Length: 523
Image (cartoon, rainbow, N blue to C red; front, side):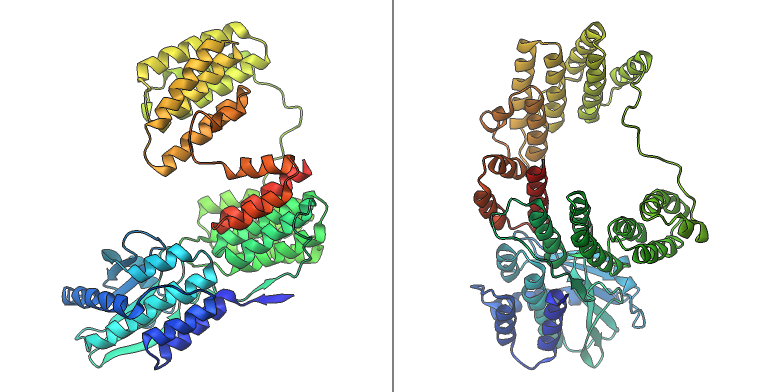
């Protein structure tokens, strides 16, 4: 077993540089070396720009402003430092809860941070270079300001992530105090040493282990724990129970450390711990972990207590430990997995839903309405009730005309669903016409996220009507990396997949791609 010291070590190095007497440029050179990167940036000149902005902010502060926090926004474009202020700074508040009450007061642009985020995608390097640079720049700027008639706390960190107390500005000047909120979010996480097969392996287990280790090592916070847990669950399915247990233990430790971190609520941690119970394998360990999750649940409000009871019940059933729930007075959910031969809905129930969806006049949610109509249409098609299906399709056509679906992702998704309805009726002409309209509606979108939504709905429609390749020839939406790697795996080009995954800079997406490769290999 090895100890994950990446982020923790980066924070320690930043702390040392903040307390040293080295110049900002010399400190940054050391931090860059520790991160294995070198930016072509004049840090000293950029720090002067930040110092001028900070002086301007302090000159405009109200007398009742007692706390300031400088957040990194993590973007390679735009203004990179968000400044928030509050009136409730408390020097004795070790959790830094006063930061949560702060209000935005402006932003500061930084060429150095833009360059840093353009080149860096991994947490340890981000802590050492971007986080470290901001701390050093603020330290020098605050020392230059001198004294303040009002005691003001200064914090810095990540928007939606870790943040730390940098120090206090008093009448005597700036007093450096590098402390972090006591949330244990940087506690060392034990990373299991699991054997991984050679590159190009066709064993799903090897890809899943890589996905889990990547999530634990380079994906921050609860997101990393949940991603590792997903890999652990898939490992159980392929018969690698010991590997699954090792990943689940590490995921539980990482999740445990996220309590009180901004953006993380206790119910999220309970759900993650409950999932880990199902994978750890060892009965005694599973019971201990389940008991811990039950204790944490006791502090939730009634709504989330009820919501998490289902997850804890599933975990307890898997571990054979329902007595733990009884002892902790957690209500045992009666929900059971759906039967494999569930009875189909009655014809009347389907038609009742169709009438309700057709009566909806919410054009903003037309995509959801038509998706629901398509679901009803598939049920009618399965019952071979083509007469009712034809009536549904005609009414859906009239509704599309009434809503005037013409452009945008809502229209594209709705028209895609309508095209599949025509396909179910063997109406080739109507299907092709509607797919063309859906493509034109998608082409009108300008933002990347909307284009991606259009691409997903169109690809789904093309798959259902047997025209999977059309998504890549007629609509130039963003490429689907999951589809790309799946296609390469089926061709036997596993080394090509290795190169595609290695080139991915988004670490969360990289972990998901590794799991997807394992799924395709195991199919």
